[in-house]
Length: 80
Image (tube, rainbow, N blue to C red; front, side):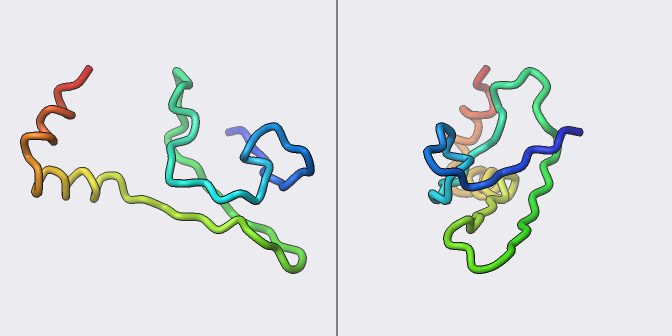
């Protein structure tokens, strides 16, 4: 697959190239052929500020929604 290097750059036009915190999100959902799996790693050469990651287990979140709000879960499962 492709390799995408994420580095903080001065004057970046894309938030991926900054050290700004990103809320949980899905990458590349607008692609017709979406990535099945993304592997991320951090290589540090000194003291870095920012870059922390938050990962979400979407399947666990969906199961929790199914348990606590089955009517809403069903609606979302039927959405096209």
